[in-house]
Length: 192
Image (tube, rainbow, N blue to C red; front, top):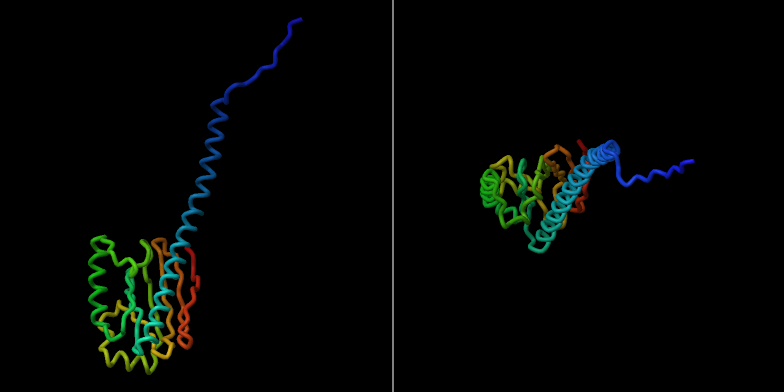
């Protein structure tokens, strides 16, 4: 009688390695789009938070100074700024300068006035009331239709407004400003 020894394997076969690699590739192919979508959502939320902070700053500055302040934003751009509404002409010049820098793909040191890379203002919608009409007529506003000022008044109120933000994949979110209280909140609009 011959004794048979049990066969011990010390390595994997080529087929086993290919199967394991195939499973790993399949897991990564499912995980990468999910991770990319999560990062895009994070950038949109971060941008909406930045806009809400700027709105709060404009409200506080209007109350402290006793003058109308505005959040100026430029549609189809990443540029925004908080300043007294009486400086609307200067803000239009700053926006034009930022458009030129963006066209040359130059990021500036003023990144406090820019949304994160890849996020843009899609649209800014404001309500018109008697106070905003008076402010525009006194300051000659409205020369550049791409510059959207959102007005904040010294009594702590503001124009009703909604600002839409989009990323490069056309995912969107918005920031809604309630004029009576001057308080803004983020509203998720759609995912691509």
